[in-house]
Image 1 (cartoon, helix red, strand yellow):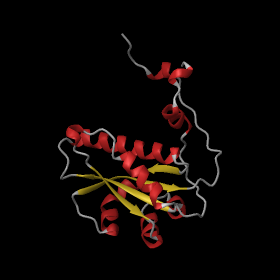
Image 2 (cartoon, rainbow, N blue to C red):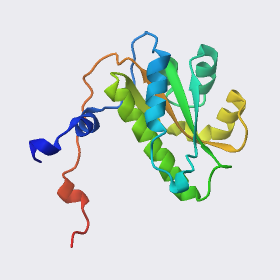
Image 3 (cartoon, one colour):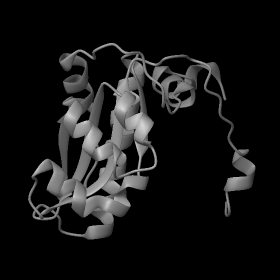
Image 4 (cartoon, rainbow, N blue to C red):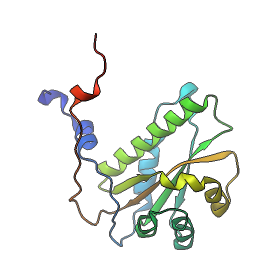
Length: 173
């Protein structure tokens, strides 16, 4: 890759890591909202923007959600949890809308990383998505797609690797 192509967006993409341990420090509301604005710029079919967010700081709610997942320590340790939902009333094609929500979550993660925050996309709780709706007192038209745990990283020693692109491209004509 040439240096000209290696821009700030690619740097954030390749340096972002899933963060599961956080400092016991509050996260500025403005930073969360800035990242949510960036998330909302994800592409969606017909520009229907089917994503909805629940921003949770309340320790009792976080604890109740933690009981619904094997990642309880991450849920309890994160200063902020953001539930990301598909609004089925805004949906026109389920698969496309799930993909759009995924793009929204990726935008959110990249924005958080660019703001110096750590986050992890948690999906294991989806096995209890109906109970999440009950705990948060949200309507059935919303379907939980993920919970993103957000905070100031406790450390920066996360590592990752990727397969070479040559292993991933299945066709090039």
